Image 1 (cartoon, one colour):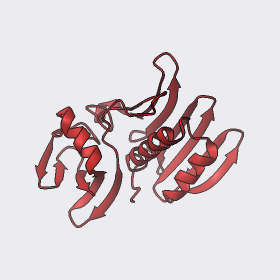
Image 2 (image 1 turned 180 degrees about the vertical axis):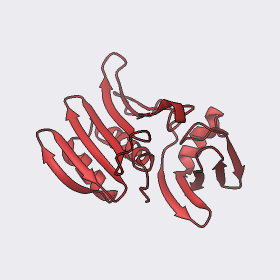
Image 3 (image 1 turned 180 degrees about the horizontal axis):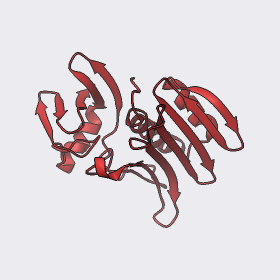
Length: 192
C-alpha cells in the first residue's frame, strides 16, 4: 500500500474501520486504530490523553477517540492543509446506524463524496446499507491506482456511478479492469 497523500490513508482507513464495525458491532477503540495505522506503515509519534499522533514520510495522522465517535485527521507532512482529510466514525442512535465518512478539508477540489458514498452500517444487522467505493492504493508504471475488490465493484456498478471517480468526483474513462481520472490523476483498478 502506498501513502503519498492524505487521501491514500483516508480511503483504506475508512474501509478498515467499516469492516471492523461490521465484524464486532462497535466502533474500534484507540488500540485497534493504532494497530491499523501501524499496519499501514505509520509510526507512533505520541500517545497522550486521548490523542494519538502517527506519521509516515508523507502523512501525519492525528487520532481522537471520544465516546461514540472516532476522528482521524490525515494531513500532509509538509503542513499543507488544502489536501487534508478527516475520517469520522460514529454511532447515529436516531438512525440506529454506524457511519464512517471521509471529509476533505478543501471541498472545492472534490466534486462529490470521497468514496462516492459514506459507509452506513445497520447497527442491529451489521450489514452495509450504502455503496461506498473504498480500497487501498498501489503504484505501477501507469500511475497510482485505488485498488478495489470485485464485491465493491459490483455494488458500485449497481448504483450506476462507475463513471464517477471515487477519489475526487471527476469523470472516469474505463479501459478493461482499470479506469483513469483526468481530474485528480488517480486510477481505479478492480482486483480479486
